[in-house]
Length: 421
Image 1: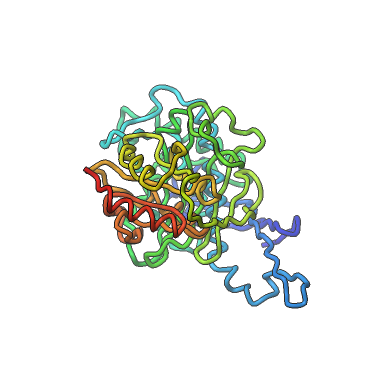
Image 2 (image 1 turned 90 degrees about the vertical axis):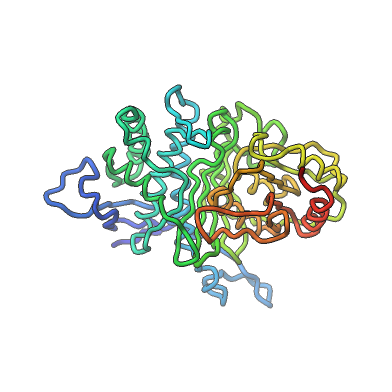
């Protein structure tokens, strides 16, 4: 292996031969002389952001030369791998969103849509994580599976997904072309049940698929569970502006701005090490996010789901009125709301699903660790912390409340005073 330093904060690894995805010896369109594991030769960029610390004398030194080195290295490689995977998936999603055609989405049993981009994004994340972290036992809790794609009636859709995945991989030096069978198998690697033991990636390949179809906001959301705790989160938000959001940023048609300057955000966090934001297509996120608590709620903005079927908007309106909030709500699809709140675009995030709906961990894992590392509190409506490390499901009391500490305490009081009908 040779290591070439391209800049002060970028290292490129060349000639690294990785054996992953055992059993996929039929996987790719490259000649294999005998049965063996799929071998990849990725050319991957690993970013290493510099952290400066000021000593007592006032002179700066890097974290690599300080006692903070061990702390800064915790989950560093996993975060690098997660960022690379989310960015890879985002390239597919941005390409597909503006080209989505009739017949390229399906409706699941709960009436939620799933598109070729959901499937392709999940396949690319599974591929990328295993390529970047070959020595880590791979377990992923993810939203999609390939059952419907394996039926005879869905072969055209499966072919299109495979084509889109390979079109992205062709842009990666040394990446193979994958067969349809391998793409479907990669999708099915999201079948882990999670739980409190071991490490498990948690993925929503497109959170906010209705927003995606409607050319609105969506996010690629990737978290990491370690012994039942969410220790890392990455949110890729291709349509989110890098400046504070306005009401129109949640509306239909914002997808047409993708690729323009100032559009596209990547939020990251490691538990205990802070939350950061940067450009989706830039270097490692380096802008630290730190929320300021408040006691005056009159000018506070609150966010909620764009779709009324995802949250009881009449009840959240009651809560806002009880708090004295006068500004209209900001309504966005997806966990992009967690990222927006983490950088201070709003002070409150409320989600109160209608009775009978059961939350899933991939709808919250990545966003929750990011907003908590920025200084917010996230609990259910009773004030209990979210148990994201028990299974694929997230059982809560009525709803989910996210805000800075003083605001959060006031919301819980308002909830107890205005119980849902």
